[in-house]
Image 1 (tube, rainbow, N blue to C red):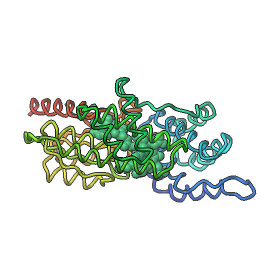
Image 2 (cartoon, rainbow, N blue to C red):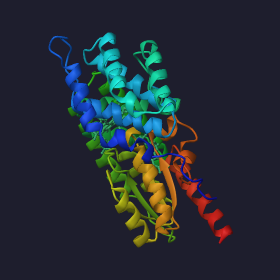
Image 3 (tube, rainbow, N blue to C red):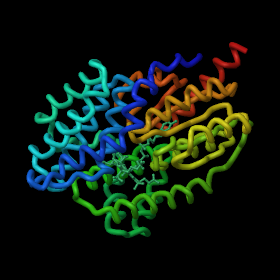
Image 4 (cartoon, rainbow, N blue to C red):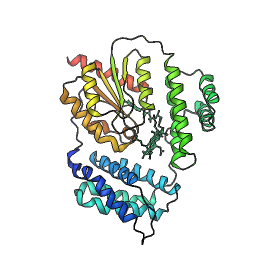
Length: 344
Ligand code: B12
């Protein structure tokens, strides 16, 4: 099983990417016009919209762009902007980028603009606990939002669930719900930070219980450059270790060049990379290309939110496989290695 060559073309958007700081300044200046009386949009926010748009266009994915617009619409309105103001932000962005895009890329932007006024303000969380675990996930969430760490820990321990179930059906849905509450301004960032920190601590505690029966297969795991979300890839790594793999875990925001050099030096069988923010997809594309030219024989698995939102993205990015749960990731890795052994 070999990866198809990437069909994402990072170079095509280079002018937009390299000039995005400058373009964002012009957009912020236009939105900030005092005569307009319009609330200020931050430079950081505009860069976020621009880089997400470029990434979605680069992989020709309207669903990824629509998802971002939907997220931004809900986020901006729950933080005090009107629908008219949200529309204006994206109109001004469109005006400043149109000269940098070909017709196909601009069509994706334009379709999004047409859809924007019709997007629902509440997009329910897609990551649901199994009905049997819903109560547990809710109890865990409530304890964490109340900053009650002992109660949250007790909820997790009370069920004696297998690690995969605990991760996928309790902790995962609870963290996705934390994101939804933050997005809709229902909790403050400190609560979100506490939930993440406490969850990471619990996961470290459970990991210490894993009985290692190592069989020599080697995993290298990281969250891609620019991406600070690392709980998901930590779960994936734990599951590989649970199944006997030796894992080298590099954490969040790891530069493409470093992933490639460690994959070669460490002689990884599989490189597992997480991407949560669509804006970081160009780095995944660069990684797939760099790994291929490095001579490393490692298979590249990529997972995370955009991979779930846009089926087939693994082929566009030129990676070997994707999965939405840790156990499925281990299974795919096994299959990739079996297929590799057959072709050797
Ligand atoms: C905690 C959190 C943070 C923390 C992360 C800390 C950490 N150490 O991870 C911090 C505060 C740093 C953060 C920052 C930001 N965040 Co944040 N964050 C979250 C939150 C609430 C939880 C993430 C999480 O742990 N999820 C639980 C894990 C288990 O789920 P998962 O990642 O989906 O992983 C599963 C699968 O995808 C899969 N998987 C994952 N990786 C891999 C890899 C492989 C190889 C495979 C096979 C499978 C696989 O397996 C996992 C288990 O099933 C999410 C909400 C959400 N929907 O996830 C928002 C969320 C992702 N963040 C969001 C945003 C906007 C941001 C910021 C831009 C906010 C800001 N303005 O600063 C920044 C971006 C920073 C960056 N550049 O990365 C948005 C993204 C919106 C969008 N447009 O998509 C979300 C969705 C919140 C929301 N609803 O608005 N965030």
